[in-house]
Amino acid sequence: MTKLETRFESLTSLSVVEQADAVARGDTTAVALTEAALAAFELQNPSINAVIWLQQDAALEAATALDAMQRTGRPLGPLHGVPLAHKDMYYQAGKPCTCGSDIRKNFVPDYTATVIERLHAAGSLTLGGLNMAEFAQNPTGHNAHFGDCCNPWDLAYCTGGSSSGSGAAVAARCVGASLGSDTGGSIRLPAALCGVTGIKGTQTRVSRYGVMPLSFSADNVGPLARSARDCARIMSVIAGYDANDPTSATDPVPDYEGALTGDIRGLRVGVPTNYFFDDIDDEVNAAFVQAMTVLADRGAVLVPVTLPHMADISAYGGIISRCEGAAIHGQWMRDAPQSYSVHLSARLYGGNAIPAVMYLEALNRRGGILRSFAHDVFGACDVFVAPALRTKVPTRHETDIDSGRDGTIEAFMNVSINTRPANYLGLPSASVPCGFDSNGLPIGLLIHGRPFAEGRVLKVADAYQRDTDWHLRRPPIAA
Amino acid sequence: MSEIVATQGLVTQTIKFWSGIDVPNPAAREMAGHFLAARNDFATLRGKARFEEEPASFLAALQSCKECAQ
Image (cartoon, rainbow over all chains, first blue to last red; front, side):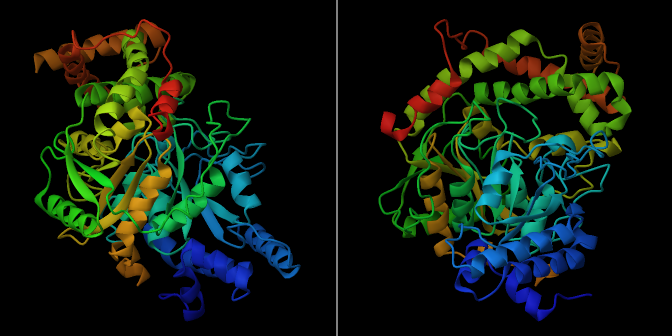
């Protein structure tokens, strides 16, 4: 098969919202959507390597049951009949969960993540587990155990990570959406590099019960999808308090999708005057400037903002996940260091050398820095924006630190420099496609809001997507 | 260069001493040298960073920074 059959292509082209609406109207079925998604994976995965495992029979069985439910006329969930596949770190009782690793290649959890249960309760079904950085610990999409995930826009380039398979599978029109996770940019980077939309919510907004931990202070669960509207629908399903995750916020979940009015007149969009544009690539900057014109034309008011504490945020943010990752992986690092890829064992190893005093200082000052940052920045603007990367999308070759070549470590580390601050600050942050570079690879725009302002972030993203078509463009392999 | 090599030695010895983990590969040794830059970043913050002496909670800060709390 070199091209997706027309009957499948017409279904995989639909967004998540369109798929759910089509099932609700009876225009298509969960079985038809599932068959189309499986056919798309069969066609695209040999190129992009986005899949770790698929459960074809179980998925079709679940789809058949959902179609039977639809025929009863009972009220349907907001994702009824929609096939999804997720980063392979969400526990499902009795299903594999490799976490992209050799160490957990045979791991089968005996309980299910709350977010997966909520997605299933909303009517979606799970096709399988998607490729990811080993233990979610790199920003590029390299994986020494399951093979690198490749960017659908050009297979030589990084997908971004760590939710590499999620970005690639959504971009390649295999699934409409996928759960990723974000500790330093792992949702927003693959969204940006693959040309799709992704959001991490406020720290504590989405339950992490049953989700492989990387850093208990900075991990976030969230969707990658084709549009802000799709992300809004999924966030409305997965967000909210979970008794199994005592760190999850008790705040009620707003109607994110209902707030997507397109009206951003008078909304103050902060454009940083520092940090995010240091050594910015000219093409990336030009796309960003053009995006600002789009927002201004919709009535947003652009205001320059100077972001305080960026040196502190950069220094502190860099050590929390390293220390916590080292603690989580300590015993495996003693027992089986050879089971890790070269670059991951190197990163985990170093986390053991960071003094506890520095780690505690980073945690102790986090709240104070957030309060000061929010006062200064969100006193002046409602959201602030930035390019997702300062550079054009790098190739897998130039960021392959396992190779040991000069410069690869620096290139690797620079990928997440603009996404990391939102994790230390705990802010909601989305990435939307805002153009293409001269290599034909996507460029991403970050939109940040104050804590619990996911709705506003999505509203701005949706308003931007009403006037642009970057998010609708398809990579050549899925055209 | 010698300072980086010295940093690598210090870091690897500290990790062995406290965590009982050996250097897994040359990349890990090289990245250990990067702590020199990280240490310097923290050094520039000295005197500017104020430790919060009152009970503090990041989760409480998230709540206090919500729009309705302003």
